Image (cartoon, rainbow, N blue to C red; front, side, top):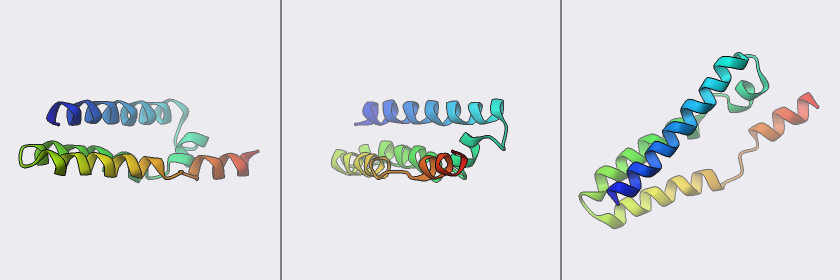
Length: 89
């Protein structure tokens, strides 16, 4: 569960860096920057992954539950991009 958590963490950090580099290239006033907003999911996910990695040393099922929670956070449709594109189009 620790290795799985590290894999998830690295993928989450890569996405976070990629999204913020795109914002840096296109500017704070870009459609992407407006759509991501404060990017709460992007900040919370790595924190939960780290918590899951720590929990894996206590009990693997707790770590699995935390990883599932992050998956559920991203499973819920995020309407920010749709809303911003709807206003721009």
